[in-house]
Length: 266
Image 1 (tube, rainbow, N blue to C red):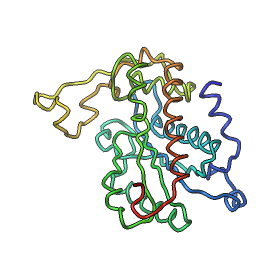
Image 2: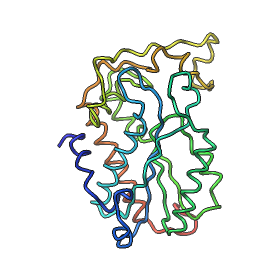
Image 3: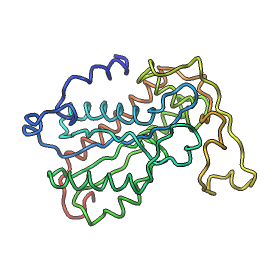
């Protein structure tokens, strides 16, 4: 079954999807692991939707939670957060950005709610490279009984990506466009796709990965794209998603089965 066909079937109410569940469903369920999809709202080239990061985080979470539930995991998917930290993209019209501190406050309150309801583990399923929850996890360590894991979903398949994707990129590229073609082809306008042209910094040493700085995306790129989407395909996206969903579902099942004790997870 094709990935996008599977997604369309997920509108059927299921106990692991909180926004589609009723109070009766929730009362009859026990949740060990919550999954929180987080994305962003920003342009992705001329051919992908502004909601790309949000859509893919939500879709991967849906598929992984469904698979984990079938494996016996006591998992619940929370409603997704469609905004992320992307002030460096505000040079493009209608980018909507939250400060990371604001995003962290929202997640803090969600963690507090989960702890109140006895949910012991949280997986933040991140779909946007500009979001960074690592400092928040350190800040919350010892202040909450909820065990928090952050997963940048696309990093779960670095090995698979290298075997499937022909050209490297960062944004609205072959990888991301293939994901869009697999998940929501009706929102992808391949007739508008073009290679993302990027500028190089005048300070040569800033080209090295070890020199980190905030890149103003409207200066770095011509059309917000970074990479070549022209070799993208639905089939490539499906292969990548299959591997990602399998690995994330396995994580959810293992977390669900694991008993919380002093020193967890060791």
